[in-house]
Amino acid sequence: MACRRDLLAAARAVAPAPPRPLDPGAEDAARAPSTGGGEREPARPRGGQPARPSTLAAEMALLREAQDAVRDGDPSAALDRLDDLGARFPEGQLREERMAARVLALCAAGQAREARAEAERLLGEAPGSVHAGRVRASCAFRENLD
Image (cartoon, rainbow, N blue to C red):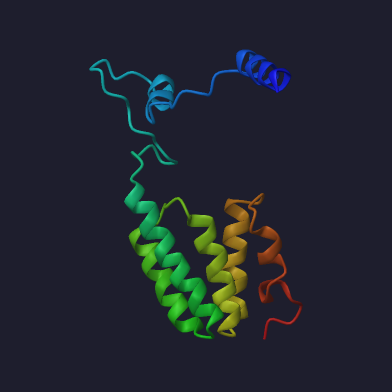
């Protein structure tokens, strides 16, 4: 028994100390450019405007509603949500996702020519988009667009 106790004591002596909890903002504050007044500069997404978490949440909610509508067989409702999303956040963080979802909703609505125009717009703006494969496989690029 003494041998086991000695082994446990030795293991505790060489084990690294558990990591200390970090201050949640300390790492971000260290990397953020200084504003000179002791406050850190807010993160800036594309377009140079300060990030607003509520904006991304609102974009995500509208996009999710549109995707749900397509899945539920209501492409008209999906297109309405996507129109609303585009009007509220024309240069939003989910712009590519919105455009790809619009292509798929237009396909679901039987509007292949409109889907093709939207697909070409997306691929012209973001040829390396993660959504390119899905968009190219949609009705927008089938031979017969009638």
